[in-house]
Image (cartoon, helix red, strand yellow):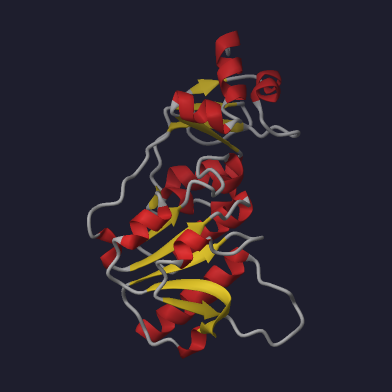
Length: 239
């Protein structure tokens, strides 16, 4: 049985300020919890009803789950994990391929970009402070388990990129075609905000601006779609 304090804490974890204060995050849903467990993520707490067929640490009733749930339709399992902030090592950006997100605020886009980084075996993803919170449920759910596999690091982006000695490629409508790039085994690909693009501070440290040729009439591409196309081009040419 959940105590009043446990109910309150689980509800508070819906908000970023409480996640940061408590150093905890919550994730809910049979599929996502199963994926994260399979990916090796260790949860400090797992609450589940009798309908959950997987690992559990504490059995609760459906009524308790409905009270604790962050969703209109509760699932059979809710898990709590400890936030673990990673740091960028000296010279780390000079090895392998990096996706850098500059103000990507849509949680679905951030989660999908983590899946893309996982699919193409990128070495890391950097997130500026203005990105959607890495530990929000929407980001974790959209990542489909990649949240646990991809090395994701929150950084001061202009400062971090200023130390890089590899090409820094910024996705920009005014850039050169991504198809004109040679294969690169080490580089940083910057994806900007959905509405404003790459910030001025980050533009100042770019080596090159790249774009995806527009053949139709669409105004722009979704940030995650653009990331996928660029990663595919770089991986095909460097293989």
